[in-house]
Image (cartoon, rainbow, N blue to C red):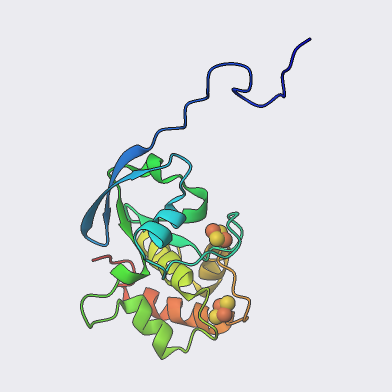
Length: 178
Ligand code: FES
Ligand code: FES
């Protein structure tokens, strides 16, 4: 009679532990080389390994946009992205948008328009807005509302968020990255 328990490796040779993978990223202008587990999300790598906690974990399921960062200039939900798939990429987080003491134009617009309350969604909103403005597709407030619909704000600060992004859009420099 089989003594199988159904667990991998229970009856055969021990199952080898998955190996880590080497990865190199350029994060906010600095090269980072790491060995990571293959299931590590970009969000967890940023927050847990690099201590870049400005990027927030909201739903961890691609539903809220709190984890939005820029990868090679494009906005992505970092909770849905396995870090190993981004070897060699340029990653910009909220910590990397300002130039020294000078806020990024989108950051400055958020301050000017008072576009946050608790602030939890704000890093994702700002990174997403920078990506949106780089895309160059938003021509109106309605466009911004539609194209920012993946970024939720539980505080309901939407009118001021939209006003801030629209201001940066009209200034024409909101899509720049350092
Ligand atoms: Fe990534 Fe919500 S934490 S979309
Ligand atoms: Fe609180 Fe957006 S400012 S969730």
